[in-house]
Image 1 (spheres, rainbow over the protein chains, first blue to last red):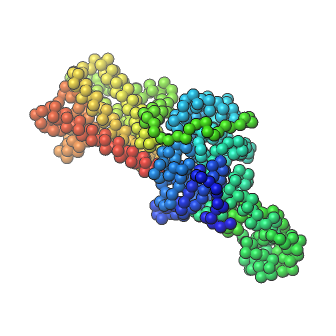
Image 2: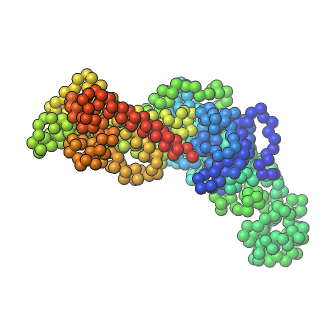
Length: 325
Length: 281
């Protein structure tokens, strides 16, 4: 697992190709610091990171609403800087917050999208009908969007993005701000898209479960850099099958150094506040706990659990994802 | 939600962008029109101002100032100089609404040249303004205000109001792109839409102003617009003469029209640039 070095994809042409992409805002604010990744056609690729990590800026550059200050990016083979219209023609985006004409009906919102993307009206009507059925929008489409609930509006926005049958779909924090039930529904919709279509999806999220459930591969992005990129299972496997978590009353860094000195903890162990997390790898939980107790660290609690993507993120960045978000 | 599969794949050909730009422009204009005029009330209420001016204020001023029918016509045409800036500036508010709570980012992600977003708004602002001006003139005629317009005069009138409306909408779109909030936009609106009206010869000749303000008035596009409107609708060349002081009326009218054309072209270009700069990071 190395930053900015992804597994080789055997592709003729990636659906998304990003090379040393960089964005520096006024005041020398570096939002994206030269990232590389490629997304295969039909792949669901996640950008996982906290707010301010550079996820939305990356999507902005790929959808040509933010101009890169360096590097290059291609969407379905089209350069986002030199061929922006072509890149936009083959993609759609669902934004983090509601971006919709509330005064118009849902159907009219879909119709405007279809017309602007140059879809034949008859094909657009058929597509709208199909999507209304699939996304349970049939009874809503002829109502003004202002009367929709948050979940209904988000389903409409997903339907709108799909009307033009994009090759690449960008989902920017698609479930943020939604209640758990609606969020669950939307994850099902996106999961169905992933399972039953050939569409390429790039989604950003700071929800670990979302990334793990939906994405074929994940890039963990932190402070504008990709710090890890791989399949969720591979990222998790890097920490082994189990880890020990202990809380100490003294200095956690000193305690960690002690565990490393005794060969109990490896380089991938880490601390957050007073908590030490020690991947076990080949060691059994029982022997590790016994060794920790022998080390006399004044641990107030010791437990074992399976690693999560939060641990991966924590180990790479030193910050808990939920806290950072 | 049903369990229907979401079809996707090689149904549509891979799209390259080589479409007639009028098609997306028509879509954008239709969208803006729907958002601007959602109910008949939204179309009728703005018409009250021109009707009030033509039917009540112009005749009242004539009575109060003991002037003749000429002054009534002067005020009625002067009202056009208030209607156009107010309409276009209020139309500019929709840009901020689009940006704050509307679908602007969706439109920015569409495979269309982004200047079309500005031009689509312009088409609707122009159409609604034209309707208001037409109602004003119709109401003035109904009230018995006498216009003395020839065919050529109507062409001067149409050219002047068209170019002035385009330029003023450019100013509105530029301001909307540069201020972050609608509150700030509204705070600046009177300085752009109303103050020039008092200086541009709407209610009295610009030569009645102090000398410095007369020169200020001469560079205001509205002054040229009103002078052309009065020349076109009333056959009155005094406005043009107050600006240019030349013998040839046609030359003066042409020069004023050139000023308006430059105003329209410059403000449209500036508005597109301002929109791009504010919308694309």
